[in-house]
Image 1 (cartoon, rainbow, N blue to C red):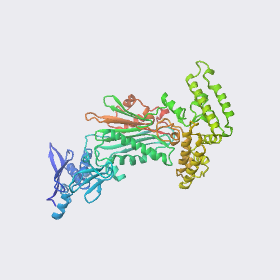
Image 2: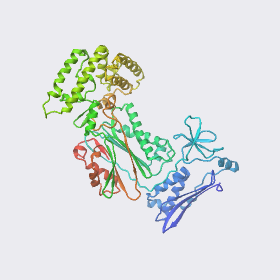
Image 3: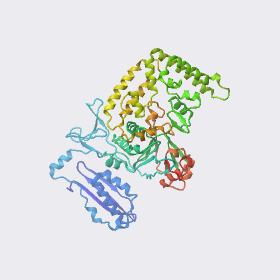
Image 4: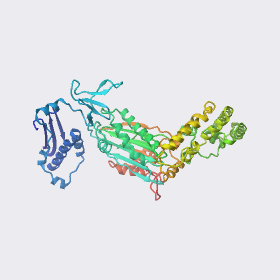
Length: 611
């Protein structure tokens, strides 16, 4: 067997130090040499322990595994007991699998092997990497070529050979911290120190084509809850990374992180936790690149040892932005005590009108029985006297707001009068739909006339709800032209069906629906179905960024989520100045630097903000 494949592990002396070297000579399936070297050691016993680790890992995981453990050995410190147990004779015990007879040798020589791992048998001549759908030809005229199905699916197209992962001399230290505010712990941090290993063990997915170090972290700061997102983030990210066997460009990695957040969000919205929500930040380090994506109250800043900082990412959604406040008002939301809510009571009629969700809400019509032309004109005259620009005292009112409110009020009157002229009954039906609260199971069931009982088996009630929704939409179909809120009415009917479709235990329903009363502190977030559908008060718009890790100087990357995202770079630099190479201490100092009103430690129980 040794005639074909040879594996040698030796310990050599170099510059008064010792080093373990792994050398493999392969002649099957094709001739090549593999050389992997461990770190320099002060004692021979340490190098012997390194050599044993290199040999064992190569037997189990091949060349990629040996190179990976060689990189990790640079940080390994052997204990006195481990050094005492070092046995140099064990270095000669590693045996490579060989082949019995010439027939076995010839058969293997004819079948070439692809780069990396994760390949499975497709047919007698080909292997396939299932995640990327790249095929490798082992024998025949096209032996050694990598192929992919063409656009029509019938023809094969040549593709480049898979990327051979590279080890970069980049040292990464990860740590997270959070501090008490008020309420329960709502933030979650997920640190993945070796995504290739985690993909193989947790997701059963090979991820052998990424550069190393390959690590990731995710921070979720929940407005209502972030536990579900933290538990499922890696299940979305790692399969997307495995879909390509070639080197990812930075733009492709940004798109992967954006897709991971969007897919996680879509699954959250369809689950029983649909009313939960959070700000989210995911960062992945592959070789010499850091790629990140975030949404909501998140921020990334690169801090250098020279006392300078570079902003890298801002999740957006600030409630203090005038443009964002205008968008929220147009979507039917409101900002109350610094928090974003679906609806709020306004003392000012102008702002109530500007935040009205539909034409009936604009006119303050709250009962379908009074929906007639006379009552509409009466409601218009009553409100017109309050918001008409000419009726306001000069210098004491926002003239532009009252002008916009009056224009919206007049348009609502014209629309409702046109709807009543078209069909009174259809107008009343669409009024009932637009005035319904369909995020609660009781409200959705009342609108569609089905059972409101919560259950884990919702198939039967969903069928009834779909039929009732279609029948209701047919009733107000004549409002399609005169009603400016027709599409919203259709969306409300569809949302009522989705509310009844979600499975939920009866004892858990009150707890989930209690979240509807809670406001949020940003207009960009994951989840929060009640604030996103059918009215887009909150939006899910992830932002991405890439940073090329410098090779000549260390740097600290601040990943901030929640209240810590409001800290200035000067505060971050000052708080962590004496904690070089200690990320845990830096993260704790950032959290402790928050004012008590925004998350600093206090004796009260509290919501937490992450860094």
